[in-house]
Image (cartoon, rainbow, N blue to C red; front, top):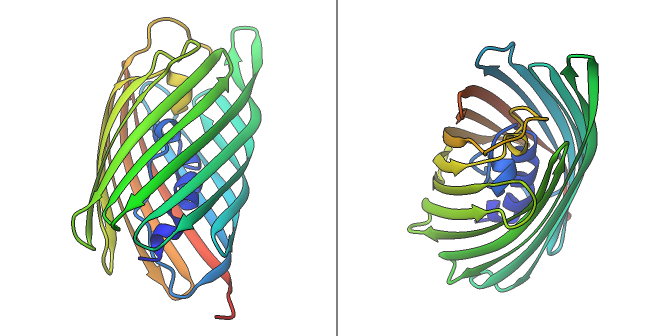
Length: 280
């Protein structure tokens, strides 16, 4: 299934360009859609809008360039987001490389996001830095079982620390996969522990259902920044669909996120335009 080749980079692009907990645990933000033809260069364009308890909500957008080479994908892009009285922007660099046979394969991926923003304070706007790096390795065996290990380092405003994650995916049939993952911070003041479950279905129209529970530092799910104290409880549910049309793939994701007393609903639309194809 060729869509798996794009999944690491599309997941990075879509999840980082949708302000939700997937940024923390590196889950696919939309069901992957298989391109109609082998693509060398693609543009990933996203737009999102959010509501937030007791605030005006927000929105944002992104643009990412993806280049597919023989055994991997390279991506570069930028994103802007705003929520309540905060706004931030950052640039991104991501890549993956794979080795092995179609049935037994190893994939190594990495990403870096660097930027800054401002949040309203009593004495005016206060600037904060936004920096996140991640590395992951995934092994696929007999085309059905996928094991993933990875970690992210977060330095966002006053929140700092490392968040390792382990995941297990089982492709039950060529159309149905389930994935479970567990992430727990080990340094800094993240105080984060998350358990996730996701179901993906692949067909003419791809869809996914997922959810998460645990405790999370609010800034790493882009709720708000600058707050300290015990990490609040997280509850999340999301659903998405995607479909290919000629030389484009379209995905829509609806997400409900509750962190402590804050509730946010986000709708994200992602369009992947395949602007070049290989000669073969």
